[in-house]
Image (cartoon, rainbow, N blue to C red; front, top):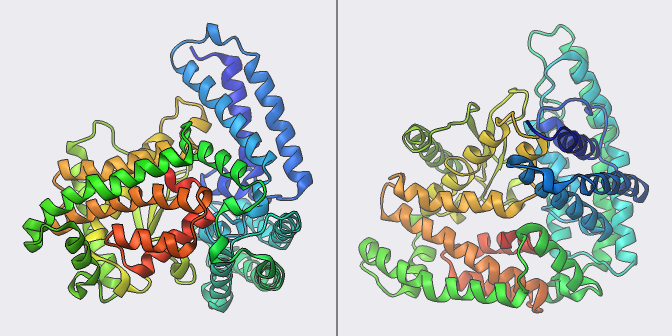
Length: 506
Protein backbone atom coordinates (compact mmCIF):
# COMPACT_ATOMS: atom_id res chain seq x y z
CA UNK A 1 0.00 0.00 0.00
CA UNK A 2 1.30 3.51 -0.79
CA UNK A 3 2.27 5.66 2.18
CA UNK A 4 -0.91 7.69 2.78
CA UNK A 5 0.88 10.75 4.18
CA UNK A 6 3.27 10.93 1.24
CA UNK A 7 0.47 10.40 -1.26
CA UNK A 8 -1.57 13.20 0.32
CA UNK A 9 1.43 15.54 0.08
CA UNK A 10 1.94 14.57 -3.57
CA UNK A 11 -1.71 15.28 -4.33
CA UNK A 12 -1.53 18.61 -2.51
CA UNK A 13 1.56 19.58 -4.48
CA UNK A 14 -0.20 18.93 -7.77
CA UNK A 15 -3.20 20.97 -6.66
CA UNK A 16 -0.88 23.85 -5.75
CA UNK A 17 0.94 23.54 -9.08
CA UNK A 18 -2.26 23.60 -11.13
CA UNK A 19 -3.75 26.45 -9.11
CA UNK A 20 -0.67 28.51 -10.02
CA UNK A 21 -0.86 27.38 -13.66
CA UNK A 22 -4.58 27.29 -14.49
CA UNK A 23 -4.03 27.39 -18.26
CA UNK A 24 -1.96 24.22 -18.07
CA UNK A 25 -4.56 22.66 -15.77
CA UNK A 26 -7.21 23.16 -18.45
CA UNK A 27 -4.98 21.67 -21.15
CA UNK A 28 -4.47 18.62 -18.91
CA UNK A 29 -8.23 18.21 -18.52
CA UNK A 30 -8.55 19.57 -14.97
CA UNK A 31 -11.29 22.22 -15.10
CA UNK A 32 -11.31 23.39 -11.48
CA UNK A 33 -9.46 26.59 -12.32
CA UNK A 34 -10.99 27.48 -15.69
CA UNK A 35 -12.15 30.90 -14.50
CA UNK A 36 -8.65 31.89 -13.36
CA UNK A 37 -5.44 32.96 -15.06
CA UNK A 38 -1.77 32.99 -14.10
CA UNK A 39 -0.55 35.63 -11.64
CA UNK A 40 3.00 36.79 -12.32
CA UNK A 41 3.03 39.59 -9.77
CA UNK A 42 5.60 39.55 -6.99
CA UNK A 43 2.83 38.98 -4.45
CA UNK A 44 1.40 36.10 -6.46
CA UNK A 45 4.80 34.44 -6.79
CA UNK A 46 5.54 34.95 -3.09
CA UNK A 47 2.26 33.30 -2.09
CA UNK A 48 3.00 30.36 -4.35
CA UNK A 49 6.51 30.04 -2.93
CA UNK A 50 5.13 29.99 0.61
CA UNK A 51 2.91 27.03 -0.25
CA UNK A 52 5.80 25.19 -1.87
CA UNK A 53 8.09 25.80 1.11
CA UNK A 54 5.46 24.42 3.49
CA UNK A 55 5.03 21.33 1.32
CA UNK A 56 8.78 20.77 1.18
CA UNK A 57 9.11 21.01 4.95
CA UNK A 58 6.27 18.54 5.51
CA UNK A 59 7.56 16.15 2.84
CA UNK A 60 11.05 16.11 4.35
CA UNK A 61 9.45 15.24 7.71
CA UNK A 62 8.23 11.92 6.24
CA UNK A 63 10.38 9.01 7.43
CA UNK A 64 12.23 8.14 4.24
CA UNK A 65 13.69 5.00 5.80
CA UNK A 66 10.19 3.61 6.20
CA UNK A 67 9.33 3.97 2.51
CA UNK A 68 9.42 1.10 0.06
CA UNK A 69 9.46 0.66 -3.71
CA UNK A 70 7.45 3.21 -5.63
CA UNK A 71 7.09 5.49 -2.60
CA UNK A 72 10.83 6.08 -2.68
CA UNK A 73 10.54 7.30 -6.26
CA UNK A 74 7.62 9.57 -5.32
CA UNK A 75 9.57 10.97 -2.36
CA UNK A 76 12.66 11.68 -4.44
CA UNK A 77 10.72 13.23 -7.28
CA UNK A 78 8.52 15.31 -5.01
CA UNK A 79 11.34 16.79 -2.94
CA UNK A 80 13.34 17.41 -6.10
CA UNK A 81 10.53 19.24 -7.88
CA UNK A 82 9.67 21.30 -4.81
CA UNK A 83 13.28 22.45 -4.38
CA UNK A 84 13.52 23.18 -8.08
CA UNK A 85 10.26 25.17 -8.16
CA UNK A 86 11.37 27.27 -5.19
CA UNK A 87 14.77 27.92 -6.74
CA UNK A 88 13.22 29.13 -10.01
CA UNK A 89 10.98 31.57 -8.15
CA UNK A 90 13.89 32.82 -6.05
CA UNK A 91 15.88 33.52 -9.21
CA UNK A 92 12.99 35.70 -10.50
CA UNK A 93 13.11 34.08 -13.92
CA UNK A 94 9.71 35.51 -14.80
CA UNK A 95 11.50 38.85 -15.27
CA UNK A 96 13.27 37.39 -18.31
CA UNK A 97 10.23 35.64 -19.82
CA UNK A 98 9.55 38.26 -22.49
CA UNK A 99 10.93 35.91 -25.14
CA UNK A 100 9.24 33.91 -27.88
CA UNK A 101 9.69 30.56 -26.14
CA UNK A 102 9.01 30.83 -22.39
CA UNK A 103 6.73 33.87 -22.27
CA UNK A 104 3.16 33.39 -21.05
CA UNK A 105 1.97 35.68 -23.84
CA UNK A 106 3.18 33.05 -26.32
CA UNK A 107 2.17 29.92 -24.40
CA UNK A 108 -1.37 31.28 -24.01
CA UNK A 109 -1.71 31.65 -27.78
CA UNK A 110 -0.29 28.15 -28.27
CA UNK A 111 -2.64 26.71 -25.65
CA UNK A 112 -5.93 27.98 -27.04
CA UNK A 113 -6.07 25.55 -30.00
CA UNK A 114 -5.74 22.57 -27.62
CA UNK A 115 -8.17 23.98 -25.05
CA UNK A 116 -11.79 22.85 -24.86
CA UNK A 117 -14.85 23.43 -22.70
CA UNK A 118 -16.65 20.08 -22.29
CA UNK A 119 -19.81 21.41 -20.60
CA UNK A 120 -21.78 24.68 -20.31
CA UNK A 121 -20.49 25.52 -16.82
CA UNK A 122 -16.89 25.15 -17.94
CA UNK A 123 -17.62 27.16 -21.08
CA UNK A 124 -18.87 30.15 -19.06
CA UNK A 125 -15.90 29.90 -16.70
CA UNK A 126 -13.53 30.05 -19.66
CA UNK A 127 -15.04 33.40 -20.72
CA UNK A 128 -14.11 34.74 -17.29
CA UNK A 129 -10.52 33.62 -17.83
CA UNK A 130 -10.20 35.45 -21.12
CA UNK A 131 -11.58 38.61 -19.53
CA UNK A 132 -8.61 38.45 -17.15
CA UNK A 133 -5.97 38.35 -19.89
CA UNK A 134 -5.31 42.12 -19.57
CA UNK A 135 -4.44 41.76 -15.89
CA UNK A 136 -2.17 38.77 -16.51
CA UNK A 137 -0.27 40.42 -19.35
CA UNK A 138 -0.01 43.71 -17.46
CA UNK A 139 1.50 41.94 -14.46
CA UNK A 140 3.93 40.11 -16.74
CA UNK A 141 4.94 43.39 -18.39
CA UNK A 142 5.52 44.96 -14.97
CA UNK A 143 7.90 42.12 -14.10
CA UNK A 144 9.73 42.51 -17.43
CA UNK A 145 10.22 46.22 -16.74
CA UNK A 146 11.33 45.59 -13.16
CA UNK A 147 13.88 43.09 -14.41
CA UNK A 148 15.24 45.51 -17.00
CA UNK A 149 15.45 48.26 -14.38
CA UNK A 150 17.52 45.90 -12.21
CA UNK A 151 19.91 45.18 -15.08
CA UNK A 152 18.21 41.97 -16.24
CA UNK A 153 17.76 43.13 -19.79
CA UNK A 154 16.35 40.76 -22.41
CA UNK A 155 17.98 39.78 -25.69
CA UNK A 156 16.78 42.06 -28.47
CA UNK A 157 16.32 39.21 -30.94
CA UNK A 158 13.94 37.45 -28.56
CA UNK A 159 11.90 40.58 -27.95
CA UNK A 160 11.71 41.03 -31.72
CA UNK A 161 10.44 37.49 -32.23
CA UNK A 162 7.87 37.97 -29.45
CA UNK A 163 6.70 41.14 -31.15
CA UNK A 164 6.46 39.37 -34.48
CA UNK A 165 4.23 36.69 -32.95
CA UNK A 166 1.98 39.23 -31.27
CA UNK A 167 1.68 41.39 -34.39
CA UNK A 168 0.88 38.26 -36.40
CA UNK A 169 -1.85 37.41 -33.94
CA UNK A 170 -3.32 40.92 -33.96
CA UNK A 171 -3.29 40.96 -37.77
CA UNK A 172 -5.19 37.67 -37.98
CA UNK A 173 -8.94 37.57 -38.48
CA UNK A 174 -11.08 37.84 -35.36
CA UNK A 175 -13.46 35.39 -37.01
CA UNK A 176 -10.74 32.73 -36.87
CA UNK A 177 -9.29 33.74 -33.51
CA UNK A 178 -8.66 30.68 -31.33
CA UNK A 179 -10.64 32.18 -28.47
CA UNK A 180 -13.67 32.88 -30.67
CA UNK A 181 -13.53 29.38 -32.18
CA UNK A 182 -12.74 27.60 -28.90
CA UNK A 183 -13.99 23.99 -28.82
CA UNK A 184 -17.16 23.88 -26.72
CA UNK A 185 -19.93 21.53 -25.59
CA UNK A 186 -21.74 19.55 -28.27
CA UNK A 187 -25.47 19.94 -28.94
CA UNK A 188 -25.75 22.95 -26.62
CA UNK A 189 -28.53 25.43 -27.21
CA UNK A 190 -26.54 28.14 -25.43
CA UNK A 191 -23.64 28.02 -27.87
CA UNK A 192 -24.64 31.14 -29.81
CA UNK A 193 -24.75 33.34 -26.74
CA UNK A 194 -21.47 31.83 -25.52
CA UNK A 195 -19.75 32.50 -28.86
CA UNK A 196 -20.89 36.12 -28.67
CA UNK A 197 -19.39 36.40 -25.17
CA UNK A 198 -16.12 34.89 -26.40
CA UNK A 199 -15.98 37.33 -29.29
CA UNK A 200 -16.68 40.25 -26.96
CA UNK A 201 -13.93 39.08 -24.59
CA UNK A 202 -11.56 38.79 -27.55
CA UNK A 203 -12.33 42.22 -28.99
CA UNK A 204 -12.58 44.12 -25.71
CA UNK A 205 -10.05 42.34 -23.51
CA UNK A 206 -7.67 39.87 -25.17
CA UNK A 207 -6.60 41.74 -28.29
CA UNK A 208 -6.31 45.18 -26.63
CA UNK A 209 -4.17 43.57 -23.92
CA UNK A 210 -1.83 42.09 -26.53
CA UNK A 211 -1.68 45.50 -28.24
CA UNK A 212 -0.57 47.13 -24.98
CA UNK A 213 1.98 44.38 -24.36
CA UNK A 214 3.41 44.85 -27.85
CA UNK A 215 3.71 48.58 -27.18
CA UNK A 216 5.53 47.83 -23.91
CA UNK A 217 7.90 45.42 -25.64
CA UNK A 218 8.69 47.78 -28.51
CA UNK A 219 8.60 51.04 -26.59
CA UNK A 220 10.33 50.05 -23.36
CA UNK A 221 12.05 46.68 -23.37
CA UNK A 222 13.57 46.94 -26.84
CA UNK A 223 15.28 50.19 -25.84
CA UNK A 224 17.10 48.34 -23.05
CA UNK A 225 17.61 44.99 -24.80
CA UNK A 226 20.97 43.31 -25.30
CA UNK A 227 22.21 43.29 -28.89
CA UNK A 228 23.37 40.26 -30.86
CA UNK A 229 26.93 40.74 -29.62
CA UNK A 230 25.80 40.36 -25.99
CA UNK A 231 22.74 38.11 -26.24
CA UNK A 232 23.71 35.40 -23.73
CA UNK A 233 22.95 35.30 -20.00
CA UNK A 234 26.63 35.64 -19.19
CA UNK A 235 26.48 39.35 -19.93
CA UNK A 236 24.12 39.94 -16.99
CA UNK A 237 25.54 40.64 -13.54
CA UNK A 238 23.97 37.47 -12.14
CA UNK A 239 24.02 35.63 -15.45
CA UNK A 240 26.49 32.94 -14.41
CA UNK A 241 24.35 32.02 -11.41
CA UNK A 242 21.15 32.11 -13.47
CA UNK A 243 22.63 29.82 -16.11
CA UNK A 244 23.86 27.33 -13.52
CA UNK A 245 20.34 27.17 -12.08
CA UNK A 246 18.79 26.57 -15.50
CA UNK A 247 21.36 23.94 -16.49
CA UNK A 248 20.63 22.03 -13.29
CA UNK A 249 16.87 22.48 -13.78
CA UNK A 250 16.82 21.07 -17.30
CA UNK A 251 19.53 18.40 -17.10
CA UNK A 252 19.80 17.37 -13.40
CA UNK A 253 23.56 16.86 -13.96
CA UNK A 254 26.43 18.57 -12.16
CA UNK A 255 28.64 19.43 -15.12
CA UNK A 256 30.29 22.75 -15.86
CA UNK A 257 29.40 24.60 -19.08
CA UNK A 258 32.93 23.91 -20.29
CA UNK A 259 32.48 20.16 -19.84
CA UNK A 260 29.14 20.19 -21.64
CA UNK A 261 30.67 22.30 -24.42
CA UNK A 262 33.43 19.71 -24.89
CA UNK A 263 30.94 16.83 -25.09
CA UNK A 264 29.08 18.64 -27.87
CA UNK A 265 32.26 19.42 -29.77
CA UNK A 266 33.33 15.78 -29.73
CA UNK A 267 29.93 14.59 -30.98
CA UNK A 268 29.54 17.26 -33.66
CA UNK A 269 33.08 17.35 -35.05
CA UNK A 270 34.46 13.85 -34.42
CA UNK A 271 31.82 11.13 -33.99
CA UNK A 272 28.99 12.13 -36.32
CA UNK A 273 31.14 12.93 -39.39
CA UNK A 274 32.00 9.22 -39.71
CA UNK A 275 28.30 8.35 -39.91
CA UNK A 276 27.69 11.06 -42.51
CA UNK A 277 30.53 9.61 -44.58
CA UNK A 278 28.97 6.14 -44.48
CA UNK A 279 25.39 7.13 -45.33
CA UNK A 280 26.49 9.90 -47.71
CA UNK A 281 28.55 7.38 -49.67
CA UNK A 282 25.49 5.21 -50.23
CA UNK A 283 23.14 8.11 -50.91
CA UNK A 284 25.22 10.56 -52.95
CA UNK A 285 28.48 8.75 -53.67
CA UNK A 286 30.15 11.34 -51.41
CA UNK A 287 32.22 10.30 -48.38
CA UNK A 288 33.67 13.63 -47.33
CA UNK A 289 31.49 14.69 -44.34
CA UNK A 290 31.75 18.41 -45.11
CA UNK A 291 30.72 17.78 -48.72
CA UNK A 292 27.76 15.66 -47.55
CA UNK A 293 26.57 18.48 -45.30
CA UNK A 294 26.99 21.00 -48.12
CA UNK A 295 24.94 18.81 -50.47
CA UNK A 296 22.19 18.51 -47.88
CA UNK A 297 22.13 22.28 -47.40
CA UNK A 298 22.32 23.34 -51.05
CA UNK A 299 20.44 20.74 -53.14
CA UNK A 300 17.06 22.37 -53.95
CA UNK A 301 15.50 18.97 -54.67
CA UNK A 302 15.84 18.16 -50.98
CA UNK A 303 13.61 21.10 -50.00
CA UNK A 304 9.85 21.29 -49.93
CA UNK A 305 7.79 23.38 -52.32
CA UNK A 306 4.56 23.67 -50.33
CA UNK A 307 3.27 23.33 -46.80
CA UNK A 308 0.86 20.67 -48.04
CA UNK A 309 3.85 18.50 -48.98
CA UNK A 310 5.23 18.84 -45.46
CA UNK A 311 1.90 17.81 -43.92
CA UNK A 312 1.51 14.88 -46.32
CA UNK A 313 4.95 13.48 -45.44
CA UNK A 314 4.36 14.08 -41.73
CA UNK A 315 1.03 12.24 -41.85
CA UNK A 316 2.67 9.35 -43.72
CA UNK A 317 5.40 9.00 -41.10
CA UNK A 318 2.90 9.21 -38.23
CA UNK A 319 0.65 6.59 -39.84
CA UNK A 320 3.57 4.20 -40.36
CA UNK A 321 4.75 4.58 -36.77
CA UNK A 322 1.22 4.15 -35.44
CA UNK A 323 0.82 0.92 -37.41
CA UNK A 324 4.16 -0.45 -36.22
CA UNK A 325 4.09 0.41 -32.52
CA UNK A 326 2.00 -2.61 -31.51
CA UNK A 327 4.81 -4.94 -32.60
CA UNK A 328 7.34 -3.15 -30.40
CA UNK A 329 5.57 -2.10 -27.22
CA UNK A 330 3.60 -4.17 -24.75
CA UNK A 331 1.60 -1.20 -23.53
CA UNK A 332 0.09 1.26 -26.00
CA UNK A 333 -1.55 4.62 -25.30
CA UNK A 334 -5.33 4.73 -25.35
CA UNK A 335 -5.28 8.30 -26.66
CA UNK A 336 -4.76 8.86 -30.37
CA UNK A 337 -2.07 11.17 -31.72
CA UNK A 338 -3.55 13.98 -33.82
CA UNK A 339 -1.56 16.09 -36.25
CA UNK A 340 -2.11 19.79 -37.01
CA UNK A 341 -0.14 22.63 -38.63
CA UNK A 342 1.33 25.27 -36.31
CA UNK A 343 -1.04 28.29 -36.33
CA UNK A 344 0.00 30.64 -39.11
CA UNK A 345 0.67 33.68 -36.91
CA UNK A 346 3.02 31.67 -34.65
CA UNK A 347 4.83 29.68 -37.35
CA UNK A 348 7.53 32.15 -38.55
CA UNK A 349 9.13 32.27 -35.09
CA UNK A 350 8.37 28.73 -33.91
CA UNK A 351 10.53 25.59 -34.12
CA UNK A 352 9.93 22.89 -36.74
CA UNK A 353 7.43 21.04 -34.56
CA UNK A 354 6.11 20.62 -31.04
CA UNK A 355 3.73 18.34 -29.15
CA UNK A 356 0.93 18.71 -26.60
CA UNK A 357 -0.01 15.61 -24.52
CA UNK A 358 -3.63 14.47 -24.18
CA UNK A 359 -5.71 15.74 -21.24
CA UNK A 360 -6.86 13.49 -18.44
CA UNK A 361 -10.52 13.98 -19.32
CA UNK A 362 -10.16 12.27 -22.71
CA UNK A 363 -11.57 15.28 -24.57
CA UNK A 364 -8.87 15.04 -27.26
CA UNK A 365 -5.79 13.06 -28.14
CA UNK A 366 -2.20 14.20 -28.05
CA UNK A 367 -1.44 16.78 -30.75
CA UNK A 368 1.65 16.90 -32.94
CA UNK A 369 2.05 20.39 -34.42
CA UNK A 370 4.00 20.68 -37.69
CA UNK A 371 5.47 23.98 -38.87
CA UNK A 372 4.70 24.52 -42.58
CA UNK A 373 5.98 28.11 -42.79
CA UNK A 374 8.46 28.86 -45.60
CA UNK A 375 8.54 25.30 -46.97
CA UNK A 376 11.52 26.12 -49.19
CA UNK A 377 13.60 26.24 -46.00
CA UNK A 378 12.32 22.89 -44.70
CA UNK A 379 14.33 19.76 -45.58
CA UNK A 380 12.54 16.65 -46.83
CA UNK A 381 15.05 14.41 -45.06
CA UNK A 382 14.22 15.83 -41.60
CA UNK A 383 10.48 15.10 -41.58
CA UNK A 384 10.65 11.45 -40.54
CA UNK A 385 13.03 11.87 -37.59
CA UNK A 386 11.04 14.88 -36.37
CA UNK A 387 7.78 12.89 -36.52
CA UNK A 388 9.31 9.97 -34.63
CA UNK A 389 10.67 12.38 -32.00
CA UNK A 390 7.57 14.51 -31.49
CA UNK A 391 4.88 11.88 -31.96
CA UNK A 392 5.40 8.09 -32.18
CA UNK A 393 7.45 6.44 -30.76
CA UNK A 394 8.61 9.69 -29.11
CA UNK A 395 6.72 12.22 -27.02
CA UNK A 396 3.24 10.86 -27.64
CA UNK A 397 4.07 7.30 -26.66
CA UNK A 398 5.87 8.30 -23.48
CA UNK A 399 3.63 11.14 -22.32
CA UNK A 400 0.28 9.60 -23.24
CA UNK A 401 1.13 6.34 -21.48
CA UNK A 402 2.44 8.29 -18.49
CA UNK A 403 -0.85 10.19 -18.30
CA UNK A 404 -2.75 6.90 -18.24
CA UNK A 405 -0.84 5.37 -15.26
CA UNK A 406 -3.68 6.16 -12.88
CA UNK A 407 -2.12 4.28 -9.97
CA UNK A 408 0.64 6.91 -9.72
CA UNK A 409 0.35 10.36 -8.12
CA UNK A 410 -0.87 12.93 -10.65
CA UNK A 411 2.31 14.99 -10.54
CA UNK A 412 4.34 11.98 -11.69
CA UNK A 413 1.91 11.32 -14.53
CA UNK A 414 1.57 14.85 -15.88
CA UNK A 415 4.56 16.92 -14.81
CA UNK A 416 6.91 17.99 -17.62
CA UNK A 417 9.50 19.46 -15.26
CA UNK A 418 12.17 16.86 -15.97
CA UNK A 419 13.26 18.02 -19.40
CA UNK A 420 16.12 15.52 -19.63
CA UNK A 421 13.76 12.57 -19.12
CA UNK A 422 11.14 13.80 -21.59
CA UNK A 423 13.61 14.85 -24.29
CA UNK A 424 15.90 11.93 -23.60
CA UNK A 425 13.20 9.44 -24.51
CA UNK A 426 12.26 11.37 -27.66
CA UNK A 427 15.89 11.52 -28.80
CA UNK A 428 16.27 7.79 -28.17
CA UNK A 429 13.08 7.26 -30.18
CA UNK A 430 14.76 8.68 -33.29
CA UNK A 431 17.33 5.87 -33.21
CA UNK A 432 14.75 3.31 -32.10
CA UNK A 433 12.78 4.17 -35.26
CA UNK A 434 15.69 2.81 -37.29
CA UNK A 435 15.46 -0.51 -35.45
CA UNK A 436 11.71 -0.49 -36.09
CA UNK A 437 12.31 -0.12 -39.83
CA UNK A 438 10.46 3.20 -39.99
CA UNK A 439 13.02 5.07 -42.09
CA UNK A 440 12.14 4.29 -45.70
CA UNK A 441 15.53 5.06 -47.24
CA UNK A 442 18.97 6.55 -46.66
CA UNK A 443 17.63 10.05 -47.18
CA UNK A 444 15.40 9.64 -44.12
CA UNK A 445 18.27 7.98 -42.23
CA UNK A 446 20.46 10.97 -42.89
CA UNK A 447 17.67 13.01 -41.34
CA UNK A 448 18.20 10.97 -38.18
CA UNK A 449 21.87 12.01 -38.28
CA UNK A 450 20.81 15.61 -38.88
CA UNK A 451 18.78 15.42 -35.66
CA UNK A 452 21.83 14.15 -33.81
CA UNK A 453 23.92 16.97 -35.27
CA UNK A 454 21.44 19.57 -34.07
CA UNK A 455 21.49 18.12 -30.54
CA UNK A 456 25.30 17.99 -30.46
CA UNK A 457 25.51 21.55 -31.77
CA UNK A 458 23.06 22.65 -29.09
CA UNK A 459 25.52 21.64 -26.38
CA UNK A 460 28.19 23.77 -28.01
CA UNK A 461 25.98 26.72 -28.93
CA UNK A 462 23.93 26.98 -25.71
CA UNK A 463 27.02 26.95 -23.51
CA UNK A 464 28.87 29.17 -25.97
CA UNK A 465 26.15 31.81 -25.87
CA UNK A 466 25.39 31.80 -22.16
CA UNK A 467 28.74 30.93 -20.55
CA UNK A 468 31.56 31.56 -23.01
CA UNK A 469 30.59 34.94 -24.42
CA UNK A 470 29.67 33.88 -27.95
CA UNK A 471 27.81 36.27 -30.22
CA UNK A 472 24.65 35.29 -32.05
CA UNK A 473 26.63 35.24 -35.32
CA UNK A 474 29.21 32.84 -33.84
CA UNK A 475 26.45 30.49 -32.77
CA UNK A 476 24.75 30.58 -36.18
CA UNK A 477 28.06 30.04 -38.00
CA UNK A 478 29.01 27.04 -35.87
CA UNK A 479 25.65 25.35 -36.24
CA UNK A 480 25.46 26.06 -39.96
CA UNK A 481 28.92 24.55 -40.47
CA UNK A 482 28.31 21.41 -38.41
CA UNK A 483 24.73 20.49 -39.32
CA UNK A 484 22.81 20.22 -42.60
CA UNK A 485 20.11 22.66 -41.46
CA UNK A 486 19.48 25.76 -43.58
CA UNK A 487 20.76 29.07 -42.25
CA UNK A 488 17.20 30.38 -41.82
CA UNK A 489 16.24 27.37 -39.70
CA UNK A 490 19.53 27.60 -37.78
CA UNK A 491 18.71 31.21 -36.88
CA UNK A 492 15.34 30.16 -35.44
CA UNK A 493 17.06 27.39 -33.47
CA UNK A 494 19.78 29.67 -32.12
CA UNK A 495 17.21 32.27 -31.09
CA UNK A 496 15.33 29.51 -29.29
CA UNK A 497 18.47 28.75 -27.25
CA UNK A 498 18.92 32.44 -26.49
CA UNK A 499 15.35 32.57 -25.18
CA UNK A 500 15.43 29.24 -23.30
CA UNK A 501 18.88 28.96 -21.70
CA UNK A 502 19.76 25.41 -20.69
CA UNK A 503 16.71 23.68 -22.18
CA UNK A 504 18.57 22.62 -25.32
CA UNK A 505 21.18 20.82 -23.19
CA UNK A 506 18.59 18.22 -22.21
